[in-house]
Length: 632
Image: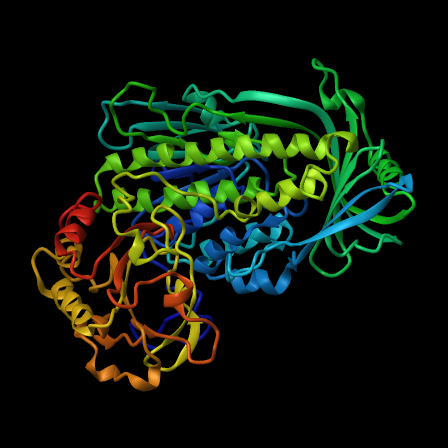
């Protein structure tokens, strides 16, 4: 993290100077009449989006929540490795690593052939494959994640805070209105319950759950099916003689059902998903009146010969598995040619079982995809048609999630006779778990070719940085100070594009690229950076050289890689990197970078690889950014 760019200021560097234009949020302050973006719902999707937008005080953002205050406990807990990479960009990845439980191993238990009424451990799997990510798979209370996003919002220049006790009643769009075409009717759910207010917005994002009022208002419907299977979930403090209670466990009993155990942060708490009863096709889980005692009794039957003695239940819930998806994630009907104004994200547009640990993760990735696009459009850097790519990209990934989770939920609920050895020498649910590791890590997302994702014509130059997939970090050393670090960690959630220029054998190609980027009228930096802005305000260039720091001379680096920034024109020393010299890994070897030729890797603001190009591909570089950004 860099600070002091515009002068020394003591205290916590995460707390930004407050913008003078921020909204008055006193106890009797009225709601605004107009906003740029109105977000409905303070779940993970809504807060992830609000945290991105809060960075920009010139964008008036409002987030409403029908509850009287923030979430305190319960709900989701799994944070996959892709989301941990995103948390690093928001600045709180290390906090989550320190506070959370790390899922290192997953164990599998099935009926003991010698005594089928008892369970027996049959396998273990490393939960995060080697070099799939530099970040761990973690488990932590969803409420804590909310708090970390809220801290980002409170500490931003906007000082953004949610408007609690307000819910969306209706949303209408006037396609003919140029400014603030969306009218939102809000209803108070607190001390002034029933009072309504109208707020006009440029854009509205519904992150308001499976019963989304925003989705209903734009004619969206969740389509899908239910597995007609009741499950319970509880966060508990308990004693047990089950030996793997501090490891993630998948347990299948002979006839009593299945359990998923997830250890939680703090060393004592753990979560259990417990299979209860099958439901009739026309039956809802609420009609069964299951209790926490029913879950505990079922858990003891499934885990025999082991027992569990529950001391405290921190949170519990009963649910049934359903898999549902909307036709689109915005307000533009099929066949209509216009730019969207209203969007849905998270459970508002896709629901599924919680046992694959994807719900919260995919919801946040929805709005991480949308946030930078809204900023680009609202700041006039991109045409509003950019927003059409949100539904196009995220619907495909949600469909993949639904299909994969559909299969996984049925395998988890199948009787052991239907999920025994599947020709691979292991239970079917263990084999499926291994096959799904890239997916459950959030690493299988691959966006199709579009204006934001180029053709993979030069993929051989960087075989491990796949066009359309997330930028896979690797160890480097910062040249100026010999700092060992992960290259991917230079990318904050600041909506900037990244160009990583990997030098080849001829360093002159890299230097020539840097000079062209800095000076040529056709350079995307020259074309898309506004007068008075720092040279890296929209496109941040970093260089990586295939040598160790002690063999390179920082003073010989081109001026683009030593830019002077801020009101004092202070030099930025953090643009040039080289090979790790302490055997942490060679980034060229780890990511398949062509050592002879080098390459350019363009990375989107949401950390996905947009294009791989040769170092001398000037016209292609110009054309790519011209297809996304407006000329300054």
